[in-house]
Length: 343
Image (tube, rainbow, N blue to C red; front, side):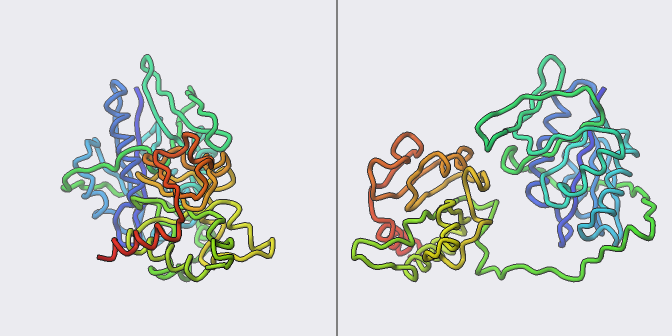
């Protein structure tokens, strides 16, 4: 009989991030499909009542929490101690967690402490003949593998965008607090502040409905033989603002600075999508001034609806990589789109 433990950490406002609710959906589904399994939820944070109460109707048999000022911020030593305490308290054989920077840093160490195994970036789960099998991608999402393990505890770190976010009525979880003894040296790392871009300059939004990808064509000479970087910046940022979209980039665009070519100042390698970048998951995607060859398109395979704008009717997007290809000038199209969105 499997003992399932769902773990999550709170955000600065005491709520759960959306990716945690997605992982919770995976844990709830798993508990229903595994006969005889038990399911418990554990929350880590400065104060966990709000987060636990928000998922009180998820079907968990119990709720645990590790709380206190020491667990308010991301710190390897305290996060690892908190997760280890939850695992040992519950005797969990399966630990389901969301893919967050905080857990990605702490969980591998916990796995070593409890002599378990871990799978990260899980993109699917299934029960075959009573045995749990998970799926994950390799080689830049070109190959998918199906894995199972006999070793327990087994940590399952769920990628964002794979499962729908859990939705349910809040209630009273009555979370039981788990005491964690911390050695003095576990608090040596101190968080003294947070540096983050202002809201109007944020371009990476994992939960956005639309991914807008800009290719190198934006920084090339246009039909009049001139560069139009300022126009490109206004059009791209205007669309992001109007649609609250997330911004992606092809490798050629973010690499142009080292080649001495013109660049868009708000673009960095963090925006890179494709073979050497990220593989985002958004309901819709719009590629502009990209040629759509495999290194770029590989990052799009989890986008549900793919559209592209390119002046070349024979570009890679026209070869079955896009649902719709607009053969047009992206400057003109996006100017009209922004005009319509502003109405």
